[in-house]
Image 1 (cartoon, rainbow, N blue to C red):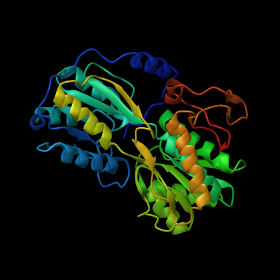
Image 2: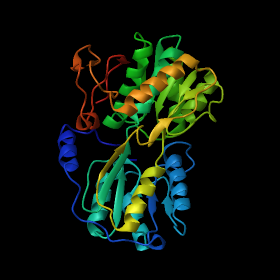
Image 3: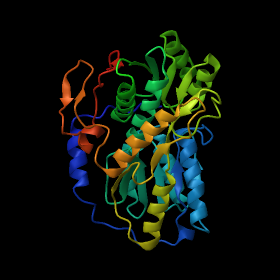
Length: 364
C-alpha cells in the first residue's frame, strides 16, 4: 500500500482557497434507481473499524433511499489500482463514487476528469473539482474527550498510542487526545508507536505489547482494526478504541472510543444528487452536527469523569470553546497557540508538531 504523504504548509493555503466558495458546476437530478453508488474501501468491510463503519453507513443509506443499490470493493491499495476500481464502477452504471481513504486523492482527481457527469466524494482529502467534493469529521473533538477519561484511568502516568502514519490527520488526533489527558493528569506522558500502515493486526498487537513494556497502562489508537483493543484486553490494561464501539474486542478493559457517523454524509449527498442540487463542497462536521461522538463507557469509568466529559462536550457543541484553543505548548514547552486564540481549520489540517506531553521524536 502506498503510504499517505505528509501535508505541506501549502495545504493550509489550499484549504482556505478551496473553502472560499463552492465550485460552480452542479450535477443534474438523478433518480435513486440510477445512482448505483460505488464505495472504495482501503480495508475489508469486516475490519471492525474504519471500513466497517463506512459499510454500516452505506447500509443505513440504502434503507433511507428505497430502491437504491450500492456496491463495494474492499482492500483497495492507495495506488493506481484504485483508478481501475472506480472505472469499473462507472462502466457498471455508478453515478456516485465514495473513495474512503486519503491516499485515493490524486486517483480520484484523475478519474473525475475523465467522467465529469459522475459525482465523486473523497474522504479525508483536500483536493476538489467541479464534480469532486471532500468530507471528513472533527474526530479530534471526541478524541479530546476520550483523553479526559484516559488521563484519569492511568496509574503509571504513561499512556500508549498506536498510530498509523505521521500525517496531520493522525497527529491532530494524537495531540487532541494528549490535551485531554493532560487536563485530567498534567504530568502524564504519551508514548507513540508508529505502524506505517492503516491496518495490520499483527503490527497493532505488537505495538500494544511494546507500549506495555514501556509501562503504559492505558492505550489509545489510530488504526483500523480491533487488534489493539484485543491485545490490551489480553494484557489486562485499559484501552480507548477508535472508529466504533470496540468493547467487543476488550469487554472488561474498553473505556470508550471516538466514533464515526458517516451515514449522515452519505444521506446528505444522495439527497442533493436526487434533487439536482449537489455541488462540490468541503464537509467537516463535528459533535454539534452529530457526525462524531463517543462510544458507551466501560464499567470502570467513574461518574465524576463522565460528568467532566459531558461538561466539556457541551462547551464544544455550544461553540464557546474548541480543542485547539490556546494557550497550548508544543513538545518543547514553547507556546504555539496563544491564550485567546485558536488554530484555524487550515492550521489543523496541516498540523505537524506534537503538543506538550507527547514523548519521542516525530518520524521524518
